Image (cartoon, rainbow, N blue to C red; front, side, top):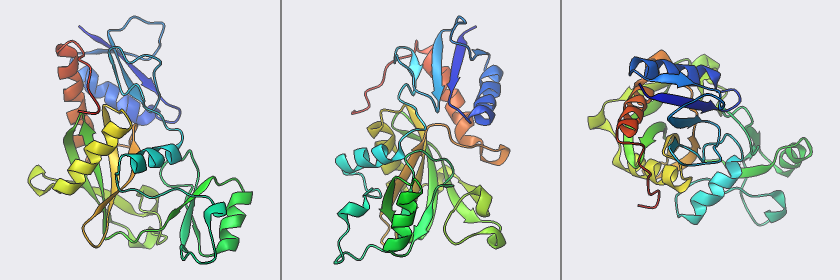
Length: 256
């Protein structure tokens, strides 16, 4: 029996436990302590100092701004982070969104309608700003080593909870599973590129679709939230982990 260590980040216990149960179902032993004996490591929202026999060694919940900068360098359409010292009166950026380098679930988002709003956020500890897009739809795409595992569309299940800005669970939005035959090729391709760009073996990529059908990468989650109704991606990931271990934990060329 192979032994897998799950190295989880802070605040990632619920979904890490879900993954643990799935790996137990697939005849793995699972540990979390680095002092224990194990054959391979799966990083869940936490990085590893070694990539040998490790999936997602680059995983981290820290610095979403740096991820956006990397996307720009690889010509992946994504929000461009900026600071107010780049703003001039001739620019018509407002409204914009204030963000923090470290965040989960969009709880950091603040809408800034003018310079006063933006400077107030800066004084209160927000780190950077991005343009506010008006997306027609939003999706989450689970990827593993250049392949799509699952795709979900965000739907507004409880309109009375929505604040008009954040599209997440706390504000009435839910993920609706999309059968493989309905997958959007453009979302699948850019999701895999974004995951590879961050040297991640797997991730759940949040994508906004513009009116002109251009997908915009919002972020890559290395420890995505999962519920019983949105577990297809995680279950398929557990299958890939099993195959990876059975094949003696091969490395992956993120630039390939």
